[in-house]
Structures are given as C-alpha cells and as structure tokens.
Length: 281
Length: 251
Image (cartoon, rainbow over all chains, first blue to last red; front, side, top):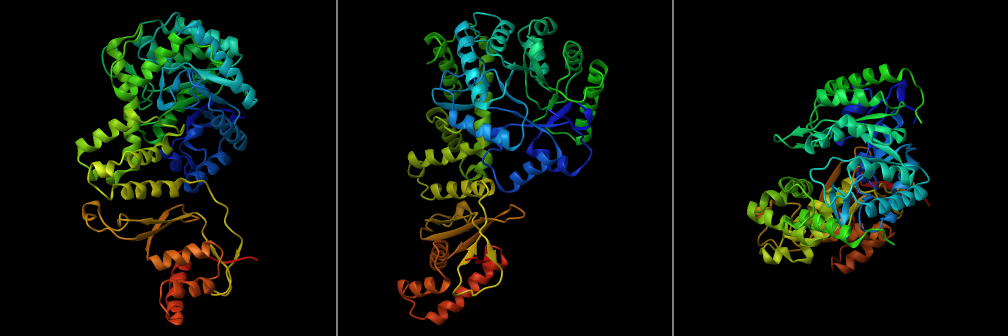
C-alpha cells in the first residue's frame, strides 16, 4: 500500500468524524481504514463522503461480518460484493477477525471466540483459502480479544500460528488485543507475541480499552491508548518489518488534536525502529 | 463440506444462542464469570442499532414494552443481513409478521415503523442514475424528468404529519412523497393528496402531464379539466422549485 507522506500510521474512518477529517488538516493519517459492511450499497451523502476520502487517502478494509470461524457456510454473495468494493476503491489490504459473528443462520454483529481446536484450525484454513481464491488477494487475519475461551484443546498462539501458516494468509497483529488477552487470561504478552508467525504480520492495530474490574478489560476502542500498550507496541515493532499501523477509535471520539497526538507518538516509535521506508508491501 | 466436528459446532452454536436469548448454556472450559459480557455486547449492539433507527417509536412505547419487543426480536429472529445498519428493516418486518401492532392494540405501529425505516433507507440507498433532461420544455406535453431517488408510499395513518400520540382514530388514506436532494443528500418529505399521488405515479410510468390529467379528470370524476390543469401545474411547479421535478426528459 502506498502510504501518504512516507508515514505508517492510519486511522479508522468513522462517520462520527468523517467531515472533520476530510475538511481539516489537523489529522494527518497515512491512510484510512473502514469496514466495507458499513459502506457497501450506500449512496447519497455518505457515498460522497467516502468518495472524497478515497481521493484524499489510501484505503484499507477491515471486515466485520465475513465470520471466517463460523460453522455456517461462507456467504459468497456478500464476499463478491466485498470484492467489487475492494476493486472500486483500490484497496490493497483486506483484513478480518479470527472469530465468528454468524451462527445457525443468524448474524450477531459481534466477535465470538472460536474453540481453539484442531478441527477448527482445518475448517478455517479451508475457508481462508476459499476467500483468498475468490478475492485474488491475501487476507490478513486478526487476533481478537476474548473474555472466555470455549472448549479449547490448544493454546491461542498455537491456534493462530497453525491457521496463518496453514492457509498462507497474512496476519493483522492487534497489539491492544494481545494486551487485553494477556490481562484477562493472565499470560505474558511478550512471550505470546514471540510465539506468533511474525514473518507473516502485514498490518498492526492499536486501540484503547476499558478496564471494568480487577480481572477484566473490555476491548472498547473508546479510550486513548494506554502507556503499557504503547510499550508493547514498541517492543513488537522492533521484531517486525515495516508495516502499516492503524489506530482504531470507534466511540467517545475526542478532539482531532488528541487523535493526532496518538498518531504522532506511534509514528515516532516506528520511525526509530523502521527507519525510512517508502512503500510497504 | 465442513471440517468441523459436531462437538465443536455444538459449542459454537450454544454460545451464539446464549448471545441471542440470554439463557445460560452448558459450555466446556469457559470462564463462567465472563460469559455474560458476550450477551451484553451482542445485545447492546442490537439495541443501539434499533433505537437509532426508530427514535420515534422508541420514545413512544413504554420502556417495558419496548424492551420486551427488542428482547423477543433478538431471541426469535435470525438476522440475515451482514450489514448491521440494514438490520432495522428486519426488525420492522418482524413486527409486521408477528402482528405486534395487533398485540399492542396500536393499529398505526406498522406505518410508524415503516415511515422511520423509509427515512433511513432514502438517506442511505444506493445512488440511482439521474435521467438526462432539459430545463426548458412544455409542461403539459413533454415527458417530465423526476428525481429517481424517491419513494411514494401510502399510509393508513398520518405518521408523517402527526405525533404518535395523536394518531389514534385518524385512519384514512395518506400519501407521502419522500426524496433525497441530489447535492446535499438531505431527505425531504411531502404529504400529497391521492390525486397528486396518482399524477406523480403516472408521470413516473412515462405519461405526459396532459395525458395523466385527461385520465384523472374522469377517474376522480372532477369533470373540470381546466381547473384540474391549473392546480396540477401549480403542484408541478412547486415540485420543480423543490428540485424534485428536474425538467424535461431528453428524447
């Protein structure tokens, strides 16, 4: 993806601040990311905003409803709509969550944890390959935050690694999700990251979260990124080749200056570890 | 062919069902104290989406009635669209299918919900190509070009005119023209009479205004073509000013 101004850090394109982002110069992301589900088939005012955004920024897509881990069949009609959208907006990165959002023919619109099991690994590998064949591009699969495992027979890092390596897909490494899971499930975040297929990481997510009790953090995307996640980000980027990095902020949107401060901080971190890269594969 | 074992599928199915109904299932190897977060997160997304789409109905119905309705919808209905912003249409369809208006003795509820959905739909619906048109022409004898991004609908209750609390006993025939302004994307609403709804429908079907009025004069038993023509031209000119009538279709 050709990034703006040789920078690496993008921001989630949200309707809540789309007008400000497009009309002001306060926020200077290298690219924007959007969920195709929220824009496919939409016309009128929002289509105009999307087209303006596409003129101004490179776009990456982060899906919500593909439901790669679902027991249900893939929704091929929907997948072809995504393919058309990706082509229309010259999208170079399409990522999805390693979770399921549809089951027994009902969409739930949230990310449910897949049992970490061998048969689920094989099931998902086959589905990722099918998706990549249809889209004619690699899928980047994201490690999700989860609040309980379900019927696990292997650890999370093994589950992710086997899927990424077996399918040939890329990995979207969500650093905040690693932090959230390490807190909720009491493991060492750095050790977890070292077990992931880091050579396949093509994209990073950063976000804020909310700690709601002594033992639980919820991945809200509604707060600023905390210091410990920045530290984990710095540690992680030192292990990786340069890739695009995305700040997710979906709720409780602050002034754009605050968002830019977070982007700048991330850019400063990666500029130290990655030096100057122009084009990111 | 799925590579999932039945036991894995069953665990996934149970978790999903729990998120829909809130009825705690028997799941293997879970953190029981954290399970409720999934129900809460899934349900909140559903509630927020429906309440945002139907703000008038949400405010009008008593809290306990609304909460029960949304709870039952989420528990009973299998949402089909992968696009959550389209899900409120399924909520409306569910209410119609389950005759919620009959059960609540609110005979205008379907109209009210549909009116609210329509506003969302017209605002967001995919762009429709505008016809090629001229600004100069003969209003009576040239084919008129109309804004294609519109809906002309009939209601049994004047949900687009009166507050929900004033609808009882107002049963009748009401017509709403709802359209999207090309440049701003704003949605405009206009109450129209049955005569003008007929005229718009026939223009849309490709008749000239003169032909439509000739038919309407006898159909509505007006028997005064000149008076009908004068009123209709005023109506059409008003719609031109509102940029709903764009001009005259190119041959």
